[in-house]
Image: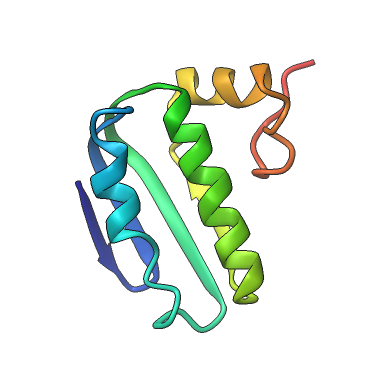
Length: 97
């Protein structure tokens, strides 16, 4: 599901309602992060709306710990969901016009 190294959290596999609880449980190890963390979606195979919820939750946690959180290699369908729900800008993702 996830592999973390050098302040990069690499997610893999499906990021859906069926798997999100396990991924959320692992959560962000923000106690070990000093200033910034990057979440890499390059190996994520499938997403649904629960992935957007996970990202927003992690963003709130990061802000409360003064950690800069960013997302890379976000799948197109996850970008579309974030835009549909109007949260792409909050997640620092490209906003569809």
